[in-house]
Amino acid sequence: MRICIIAEGSYPYVVGGVSSWVHSLIRSFPKQEFVILAVAADRSLRGKYAYELPENVTEVHELYLNDADWTKRRRRSRMNKKEYQALRSLILDQQVEWGALFELAQSRKTSMNGLLMGEDFFNAVKDCYKLNYSQIVFTDFLWMMRSIYMPLFFTMKMKVPKADLYHCVCTGYAGVLGSMAKHFHGGRMLISEHGIYTREREEELIQAKWVQGLYKNIWIEQFRKMSRLAYTSADLVTSLYERARELQVELDCPVSKTMVTPNGIRMEALADLPGKTEEDQGKINIGAILRVTPIKDVKTLIQAFGFAKERESALKLWIMGSWEEETEYAQECADLVEAMGISDVVFTGKVDIREYLGRMDMTVLTSISEGQPLTILESFAARKPVIATDVGNCKGLILGENDRFGEAGIVTHIMNVEEISQAMVAMARDEAMRRRMGENGYRRVEAGYQFKHMKRAYRDIYKSFADSMELDWEEEEEPLEDQLALAQRKEAR
Image (cartoon, rainbow, N blue to C red; front, side, top):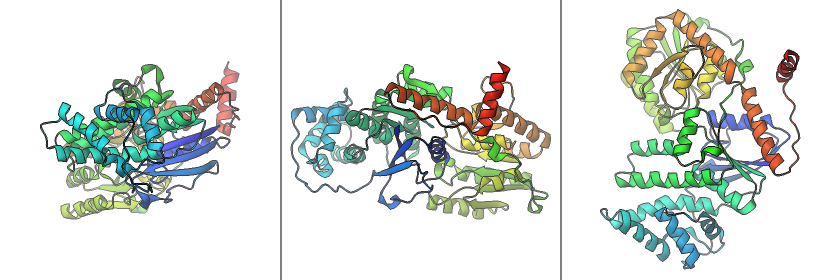
């Protein structure tokens, strides 16, 4: 089966939870052919992969949302009635005729500059303005609409590869590509959301300074349109936990299409980790395994640690992860450490966490948005308790969801320096609590969040799609430990 993975802002350019998940998934099915359709901001990322692509990846296609219009013919041709009604339905969000829009954008004569500067786009925007936004300045509104629709039309102009299954790792522009591919090539469409894309964009826009007032609402509605398209086109939509599935339904995903497939990690890779070194003597180590980016809210982490350090001098913070993605923000974080005069803060950059995790007494995650973080599962596998903000499924992982394993850490509110600082101090002062929570987390991940569980779920999903299209499915061999477990289950019966 030929599977096209459609990823936005992640694999294969950026190291992180979603990218790691995609990479592991592809490697888990070496007998299937994978094609990558990667959505990036601009051409500066072209070919700059953070991962060595597996051998079963046969093609990589790249879309740049902030690209130039390379169309040779620049003339501003008028649309026919069907095309104009489709454009107007999109701008006014009235039963959007996506198929007609796909065909319009794929037409060789269509220039994005010509379309967005043309009379038809102007008239459709003017209708939207009169109906909904006449209280603001029209020229500002017009230019904002052009900036909103330029990346969408670049997306719809993309020549998508042919595949049997289009597996989108989010909705958004990736979901538009999957929907368009299904429209032109047939096949099936699967969405696997790690975070709920539309809600994440809402959170970012609410906090953004580059867009103000009603324009925030217009941008948010644009992402909702794209998500509705993706949910409508998809044959199956997965999420990592129950609350995320409920949010998808709230955002108009048909409940019959939804399915929960939790994350999973390879626990054996985190067994027998090296413990503390001479450097760690007398220190209580806090590990933060994250990319140094605003969404991880590293500044709140640093401030909280600074206040905790004043009360517990033995504390030491290890920030383990790449800072190249947002270099300006990373520098601001380093400057904050210096300005606050905090000692014992180490920025390691990208590292092999297996060399560090065994040295930690606890880990911390202060994100303002998450799905179901692999870093928490990895901490649990290493028997380390976790302090995390109440975002995504962090609370469910730490406190448990319908299990009896007990608390595996402390949950705080986002951007709450005092709460996070108090949690660090409380955990630092109670070694018995740390050990108990670490053991609770280990049992929780062992019971429900192992990679072999996730692999079996996607093996069943992929095979069901292959069967529905009457495609051959060459069965993958189970790892030795999975074969033994299966044999034991059969004997027990």
